[in-house]
Structures are given as structure tokens and as C-alpha cells.
Length: 251
Ligand SMILES: [Zn+2]
Image (cartoon, rainbow, N blue to C red; front, side, top):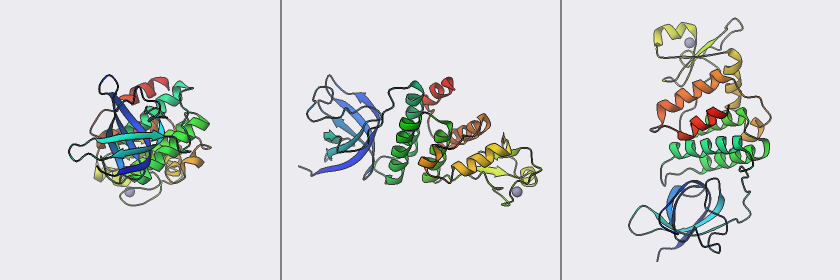
């Protein structure tokens, strides 16, 4: 029998598999994203002390199966991990759902993702303590995108590195470039742009460089910034994020 392995993990999604079994996808600290079958998850309180539901933060125990993609989940325990309490507030549930769906979209099964796991834990923990703040959403998006290899540039022109001067009244974010461009470069580069106020661009530049915990005390950027990031994410993920509609409907 394969050895039992273990890792802290956050549940990203679940689906029922049979009367008592559940297929669970988790972002683990040690093994990246894993999907497994939890036999008896809907009935066994002993093996699954903490329920395997979206946002559950668990110590996951599993065995690999010789054939097939799914691991066999043997146990899930609390193991002194901070629990992520989101269920008391609809806005927290909406933002948390978006965070786990984006994490799911940006990770691949069994590819190393320890830093992504930490960003997700820190972000869900921050919204459970501070509420569904716009700054936390934006800091999460920028941190996760950077982890996935998409560091967005809001401080200076992506092409010539010039910083917007005090005379600038709006800056152009070009999703296909992953950053803002100055007026001079804009003409030669082309591409569809989202217009940002200088304040929004500066706020995103700052939120992209501070920790999630520090972002909890910051103000978020405006609707223009939300649109710019959403356009960029839509251009790189291979699916429509279903939680986004719900999240935006609450705003
Ligand atoms: Zn330029």
C-alpha cells in the first residue's frame, strides 16, 4: 500500500460522488493542487473531523493510488491550523469564493504551489478578520498573478519605464502588455486599453508590493482598477470565473 502523506491544505471545491463519498480538490502546501476521493466524507465524523467543504483549512492525509488521477483521502484534521470563518457574512463568502476559484484557475494539479497556498491562506484569513475589503481583493489578485508569472506594472510605462508626471490626468493600462504605458509609447504600441486615474494606478502599484496583512489597513483602488484587473485575468485564464458575477452583484 502506498505510504500515507500529509500536508496543510485549503479546500477549493467539492462535488458529491455517491451517497456518502465526495471528490475534493484542495490547494496543499507541500504538493500543489490535488484532487482526491473522500470515502464516507458525508457520514464519517471520525475520519473527517473537519468537514471537507470549500474554505475548510485542514491537515490532509492521503495515499496515492497506483492508477488514476485521484488520490485516496484518508483523513482530514484541524491540527491547530487557523480556521477561516467566512460564513457569517455574504460579502465574505462572495470574495472568498472568488479567491478560491481564481487560485484554482491559476494552479495546475501537482505543480509546486507553496507560495500560492500561503497567499490564499493569508487572504482568506484577512477577510475573515477584517471583512471583504476591496484592498484585500486587489492585493490578492496582484499577489496571485505575480506568483503565476504575471507581475503587473502600474508604477511606470511598461515600454520605456517613464513614471507618469504630475500633469498626467489618466493612464492607459493595456491588458495584453500587463501594464500601463505612457502617452508617447501608446501611439506606437496600440492595443485595447483601460483608462485609470493616476490615483488608482498608484494604489495598485502600492497594493502589489505590500503584504496581504498590511493591505488590510489600506484603501482599495476604484472601479477603473477593478475593470483593469478583471480584463487582464479574463485574458489569461481558460474559463469564466463563475463567482465573479456574484461578487460584482454585491458591490
Ligand atoms: Zn513609455
